[in-house]
Image (cartoon, rainbow, N blue to C red; front, side):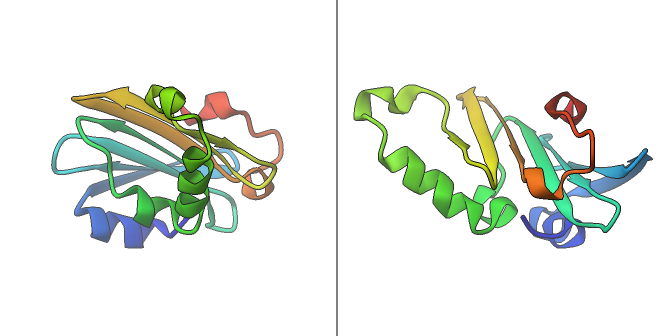
Length: 124
């Protein structure tokens, strides 16, 4: 996952940030009304992101090298199951995506970079 300012510029998004305990939540509003949230740890490293809205953001840019892992994992799925949301669950990264025409969502996080006590429910 890349950096917040790089992503904000690439997505041409408006940014607002809020510090919450041991992490900071950065909310980026996209020109199409979609929302990307990036979560950084105390060292400023992005450890999680979520997205939702009428279109998918540039996931290749947001996920960096993890995007290729997601695609490779999805390529091994039975073609009939491809209508299911894509997901990748590994010890180094968890990515889940879903949605339908007009509304897409997703969550990705790197467990090793997450603050102690991190829970996926904090990404709401």
